[in-house]
Image (cartoon, rainbow, N blue to C red; front, side):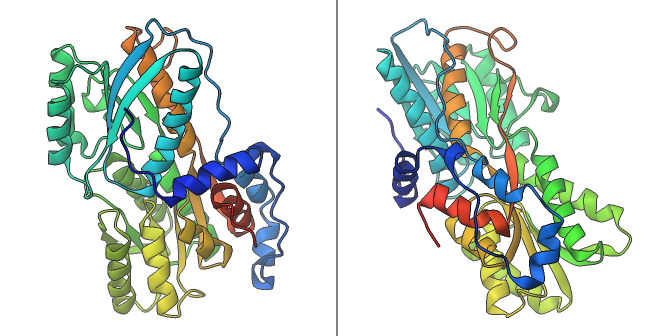
Length: 370
C-alpha cells in the first residue's frame, strides 16, 4: 500500500508529463524580458535552455534484477509539503515500472504537518518494529536523529537517507546510503553569488533559513554567509528561521523590511520562504529595491520569478530523487553495499533558473501557459 497525500500539484505534474512528451522536448521561453533587465540577461546565455532540463520526467529503471518479487519500505521526511509530493511522484513511477516486471513495491511515505526531530525519531522507532525491508529518512536534525539511525543499524535494520538532508558518514552516521541533494552548501553559494552579482557586491541582505538543524537549510545558509563574508561592502542584517512555513516567512520578512529600509536583498534557503518573502516585498512596494533569490519550484514562486519579483531560484530535480531512492532501496534490501552496484551518495542536480526560464518551468511543471 502506497501511503501519501497527493495534492493538485501532483495531478497537474502527471498530466504535464504525459501531454508535453517529456522535458527534453520543450522549447525555450520566447517571451521578451523587461527592458531594464535586458543588459543583465545578455550576460547570461544558458538559463532559459537549462530550465528545460532542470526536472526529468522520463526515468527508466537501470536494468538491475531484484532478488525478490515483493518489497516493503518505510520513508519518512521532514514535513508535509509540495516539495516532497514531487519526490513521491518519482517513487510512484519507479514502483509502477517494477510492477510491470512482476515485482510489487509496497511503501509508506509519511511526515508530520510540522517539522520535528522528535516526531521523526518516534516514527522511525515504531517503523523498526514492523518488518520493513528498508527504512528511509530525510533527516530533520543531524545531531538528534543520527544516534537513532546508528542504534537501528546496530539492531540490523537497513536504514538509508534520502531527499534533501543526509546524516553523512562525516557526521558519524552509519546509514547505508543517501540519495538526493549532495551539494546544499554549493546551492547556497550559487544563489548568493547570483544575488551579489546583481547587487554589484554592495548592500545589506537578510537570510531566511527554514528549519533549525535541518542539514539542507543550514548548509545553504552557511554557503550564503560564506559568500557575503567575501565582499567588504556587503553585510547580513538578519538571519531568521521560518520553519519552512510561507506565512511565517511572510511575517518575518515584513518585520525585516520595516527595520531595514535599505535592505538590498533576501536569500531564501527553502521552498516556502521565497513565496513569503515575495509577498511581503510586493506588499511593501519594494520589488525594485529588494532583490530575492531562493530555492525550488513552488508555482507561486515561479510566477514571481516570471514577473521579476524574484531574481533567481535553484530548482532541484525532486522527481529523480524519488525515482532513484526506490531503486537504491531495492538494492539495499537485497543486501548490496555501496560501491558494488550503487554509490554511497547518489547525487541529484540543482539548476539555477532566472526570469527568462520561468515560463518554461511553469509550463513543464504545472501546464501553465503565458
